[in-house]
Amino acid sequence: MTGSDVHSTKLPARRQLPSVDKVLRHPTGRKALKAFGHTAFVKHVRQALDEIRTSDTPEDETERCSEASVAAQAARNLERGQAPSLRRVFNLTGTVLHTNLGRAPLAKTAIERAVAVMRQPSNLEFDVSSGKRGERDDHVRHLICDLTGADDAIVVNNNAAAVVLVLNSLAREQGVVVSRGELIEIGGSFRIPDMMAQAGAKLVEVGTTNRTHLKDYQSAIDDNVALMMKVHTSNYVIKGFTKEVSAPELAALAAQKGLALVDDLGSGTLVDLSEYGLKRERTVRDALDDGASLVTFSGDKLLGGPQAGFVVGRRDLVRACAKNPLKRAMRLDKMRMAALEATLKLYQTPEHLVRELPTLRFLARPLAEIVDLAARLAPIVQKAVGQAFVVEPCDTQSQIGSGALPLDTVASAGLALRPRNTQTAGRQLQALAEALRALPVPVIGHIRDGALILDLRTLDDELTFVEQLNDGQNRLQSVTEATQLS
Ligand SMILES: *Cc1c(COP(=O)(O)O)cnc(C)c1O
Image 1 (cartoon, protein in one colour):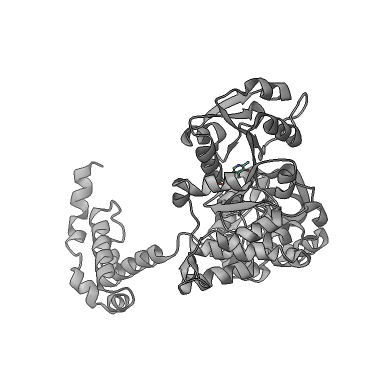
Image 2: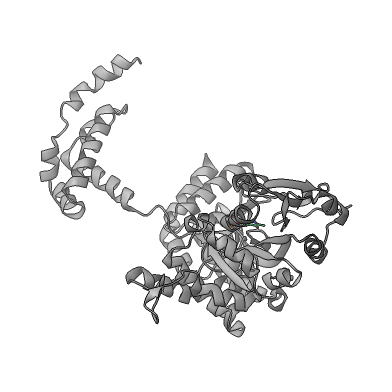
């Protein structure tokens, strides 16, 4: 069929398109007009009419052209447009701190403090006792110094910003010595060499990918070198024939040469994770004790707070960073400052930390509790997805995520949803994953060994999870059964 044929067959129906005015006067139109207002509704009625006018599907044309249908279509489009784009999901991926899913969920008090300063004016940069201008970072400086043993601290937008700020403040047009084994890329957009270039510093690579010796650093240091840098290899481990220079050795060399040593910790925990049954990760205090002049780390990784980046350590160096005009472009807003202060305050009562801080609560969640949860949910999920799948509790391995202990996993439990018909398994799994993502609160798992796995370590809202499965049961089953037959 040629274009002109389509045209001629559809012409009679098109002539019956109602006027905008008629659509607005129809009861459905009148109701929508009240709900959405004149401007938005008229715009969407025009769009709906245009869509019909230019569409290539002639079937049901008369029905589509009725005032009621056009009004309803416009209202549906408006409603869809008003639904939030950024919304909650169930992170059942097994990665506790998932960058794509927003990393750390905030503690209750952090949320409450953030909401409070959103509602009302605050003393963000105002010293209430003197009535003079105050420092934004003062709200958290003493807390972070207290928790890490640092002399001074500033806070910026994220750890990437912290690294750029340090390099730009302390090594502009000068050399920064980094081991070739630590030239990391995180998430595709954070690469040490690129950050270095953007910050205006010159990367001085030393050693090889697998082995870097103290003498490599020694011979690379000349008059043009301003900084030595150590970077936490957050998403990989170099194994086999390897050699890395320890932080204390680097610090000793830096001191001898009169250079500052920056340790980019990445995740940067403030507590000894071994107390919570996890493997110990170097803390910020460890890095400072090992002799780093400055340590940089994130606020929304293991620390469990809002997105933020810290520069902590020697006062003269921190002040140099604070004075850099770039700091202004990287500063924290009041909402995150309030959430960060509240999060850091939780660390003052370590006994309650695991109860109050969701990140730590998830990481330290007893396996027996997750196993019970899996047993409880298996029949419910089985009923919801129907007989096309076998749902069984299974062992899983959770990861911390966001670059903490990259190769270490934590024994966990979950559900395996496996297609009964192995011939169509691939397609069925994709359809099931899609259907679960289409629920009001999308459920995000991962596919492994022919099954969709839902790791339950991070499920704390069992009620909503179960309710929406029950509500969505018919839709889930029709989607999954349709792919089984096709
Ligand atoms: C995660 C990470 C960063 C980037 O931190 P953001 O807070 O995501 O900006 C930088 N360095 C290391 C070593 C990291 O692990």
